[in-house]
Image (tube, rainbow, N blue to C red; front, side, top):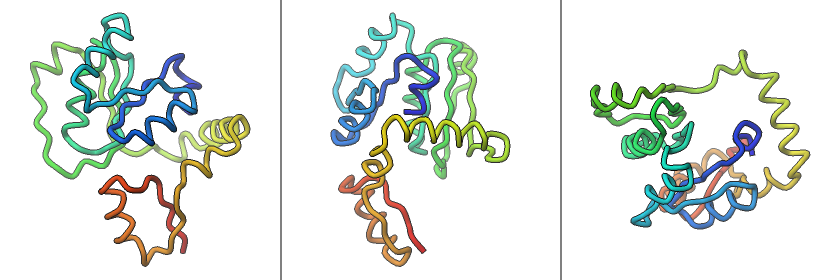
Length: 162
């Protein structure tokens, strides 16, 4: 929903069918990265250029490499996924594509007012978004069980209550 405020067309790429369906309900066009032709499909949908910007939220090297492969020449890759594994980026590939890359969390103080306004607009337009997005509220003591379920793709977003 936030991306739809900034971009006319938003593509959601996710291996989990339920998450793709949710993205479609909120205005994104979804692609299954496990299909053999998803990269060529995305390229054809973007006039054979690739997307202007790619947001990588997984935090895995393969997701970052895919983002770099998909983004158009001189596009932007923003990665807020927490990378804990080593990454192997090839300088020639980055140089040839001229991609701008951003890593890290948002700087809350610098974007708080804008982000709060965006959250208000999005939730007013789609009042059930948060309830659908947050699938479970649990006590912190149950975190291990729910991380396991998340890793097995049996559950989506979980909020910890203290």
